[in-house]
Length: 305
Image (cartoon, rainbow, N blue to C red; front, side, top):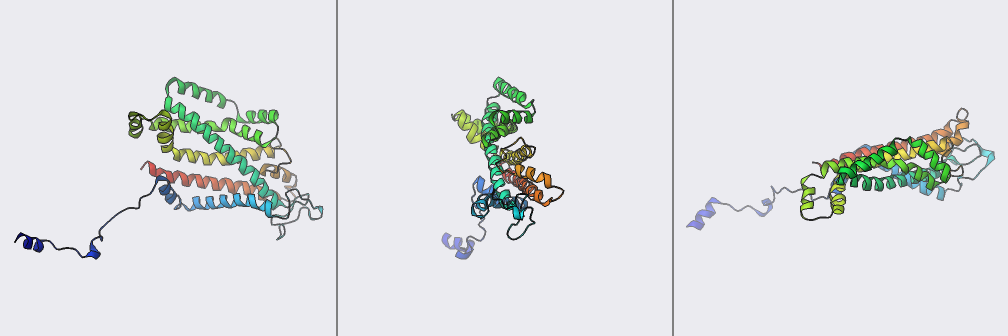
């Protein structure tokens, strides 16, 4: 009797309707979720695509072109852009397109290398200062303030005068004080999140200080850190280009973007198009990096939500 009553009160659903109201979200890791949000930013994707194309061309064009970056042909000097020479030729008949791409190889290598070095130093220095706190933090940050009180250009000129106009010396000159901003950013982020529940829980269960700092604090502050990193790359490009443009940067035999702009300076009023290509390469590369930084900043906000 009870079984019959149960059958009358309840009706079994057909098999094709059992999962009609099933709702589930795709399981995503933090990085996968950030990438999916980053892809929705059109300007960020355009910046990433342009930067990738610039890097590939800087590597491939000097290797595949039949013109070397130092190959001269006086008969075609100061030629206008053509199919044979897309950017024209300079005052010595050298292909400007090949030289701009080769200069991009030098400038981008210096910029990314210096940014990576500053990232490592800034995370370690700022992370320790923010995590330990107290007198250690005070001493470490006063040392930073002393370094930052002297104009960066003086450090750069002094280092280049002592070690010469080489790429390692340029890296040292750019990185000597550029890590300070990263260190302050990391310190501020670590101080703001080290008292949160997950950090205190890691301390209670006996996690080491190194694991807490790197695994819990720095990782959860990775968004602002990467945004700061993307701003350091264009800053390094401008620094190297400016120093080479005014003649105190790399050796004249190294055709960086700044050196190429310096070579075209004398012809600015007669053949201004020659310097336009270098300026466009620098400006568009830095603009794409700014777009990438904005996109990363928005993508990594999901951790706070």
